[in-house]
Structures are given as C-alpha cells and as structure tokens.
Image 1 (tube, rainbow, N blue to C red):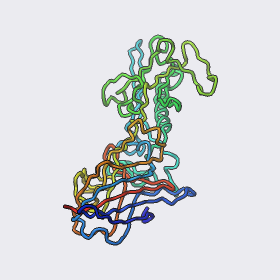
Image 2 (cartoon, helix red, strand yellow):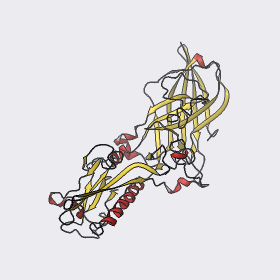
Image 3 (cartoon, one colour):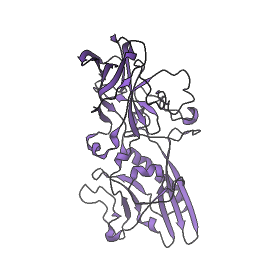
Image 4 (spheres, rainbow, N blue to C red):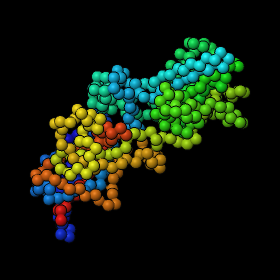
Length: 409
C-alpha cells in the first residue's frame, strides 16, 4: 500500500538543538466488500525537504502503533530437496508391542500442513513452490499467506489426519485388535489440549499394546500433556504420551460434547477411552513471530545491529543476496511480546494491535550526506528462524509511526 497515508511535518526548537518530527500514517481503505488481499504496511512519500543533510542529524522512533493481520504462527516445512510443499517437520509415531511374540513395530507419519481456505485469495493465487524448486527454501513469495496458521483447530486436524494414517497402517497389519485411532482435542472452555486414546491401547488381550509418541518440535504446542522424554530425533518418538488409568477413574473419557448437557455416550467400566490432558495452557508457546522490524531505503541509519541486509528471505539466502542488494536501513527492531501469557486474552486470532511507546528514546546516527526529501518505510515481522515477512494491514486498519530528528552536538 503506497501513498494512502497522510503526513504531518512540524518543527520545534528545544534547548540548543533543532528537533524535527515526522508522523506517518498508513491506511488500508478497503471496506471488506471484496476478497482482495490485505495491504502491505508500506509508505512511500515525496515531500519537501525534511533534512538538508542527513549526517548532521540523529533519529529516534518516538512510537508506533500497528493494527496488523498476523497468524498464530507461520508453519514451517522441511527444506532442502523436499518436493512436498506441505511437508512439516512434525511427526507422530504409533509403536505396536506384542510381548508374547516379541514383535515391536513403529508406524510413523509426518504431519502435512493444511492451508486455510482463504489462502488461495482472490483472484486465485498459485500454491507455493516446493523447497526443491525454490533453492531449498520455503516459498513465501508465490503465495505470501499460504503458510499462515490462523486456527488452532487446523493444527488439531493436521495431527488427527496423521494419527489416522498411523492407525490404518497398524490396523492393516493387526486387524481388529484395536478399535480406533487416538486423537488430539482442544477444549474451548478450559483452553487445554488433550490426547484421547481407546482403553485397549493399555493392553488388548494379554500381550498387545500401543504407545503414542510425538517429536520434540510438535510437543512444544501441547506442552504439559504427561509424557516421557526419550531423546531427540527418534523418528517421532521423542516424547511418549503417558496413557494411564488414574486412581478414581480421573482419566476416563466418553465421546460427545461434555458442555451440551448429558453426555451422548455413557461412561463404562472400564472406560471406553482415556484422556491425557494438559496441566497448564501452552498457547503462548505457539507463536514463532519474535520481532517487529521497520526498515527504510530513504533514511540512512548507521548499522548498529544488522544480522543481514533486510529483504524477505535475506537471513537465509545469504549467498544469493550477497550482491546487488537494495540498501535498507533498520529504523526499529524490537522484540514482540506475544509470548507473554498475560497478553493473550486481549489478542484476537488474526488481528493484533502492536504498540511501541518507549520510556527512553534510542537515538541513531544518520550517515548520508544527501538531503532527506522523501520517505520510504516498510514493516515486517521476523520469525524465529530469521525469515522476515511483510506486515499486512486488514480492512479499515492503519499503522502509525512517529519519527524524531535532532541536530548532532
């Protein structure tokens, strides 16, 4: 979105230093009457001379306020020569053990990403390239929002799809021994995850059992479900879920909506199902959005913290971006506190209000000898792996950024 903003330029003399304030507002004027994608938080404005010579000044971000459309997290997929665009690094494992015959068999499945329905956009955008066709990298350029996870239930569905594949393979080898798959559920009242498994998994007949495990990468999303840690990189067996019958029948479970009056399927003894529930809420661990990044190609700021020149994919594609990069200065690079549990009740799933209002200003040197007579601003969020993706503004949303300039001593 370019040139939809308004700008307000004022000058104020304070003490012996000249202070210049420049306030930027980026608007998305769409009113949600169409299915057009959200607008990027980009500002380009030609203006009269703001600074006669940039290197005579230093700059600070006074504040910013962004109404952003951001996912719960951005789902990673396996890179390298992976040819499947939806192949995530998450795994589930069913281990079949027959203590009578001594047979132990593992049935491992990878979780496949399920994009939200609107990821196709309007007009319909093509699906992302596989890493094998994209220099070994996850493709965020062909369809930028494809890998956005905007629903917890979507991840639950991904897990249960993989669990069903494991069970079907096991059931084909050992037909009729176990009645059904184990499944992941999310309780919208308690906000806790749980894994429900048929009682027979504890032991069908005298000898046959099933053990359910997940890899360490996925376990963080369901952290605090009772599990035994076996080690890392064990083909989906990193964390083995503790499926047990608790004293007093506390782990007993019956199918149905437990908040809709009488449970449709009455409890039995022994119970038909066992439930292994989280001990505490783990949703604050889901987000892999770690920083908010604001850059400019018109304001030349001295490099103080520069992991790499900031363009989308630059952190990962270092060799490919080594030459002919557009010079972008980092205006602001701050940690994003969505992982703080106390903030979660005031956040919605998709729309976030990101506010930065520092108590003490951080002044940065400007280094160009050119005047400042146009403003370019771009806003990104940075993932845990260093990838930077553009912030998008929803319909009727806006972003504001307040900059201050002062003469150097």
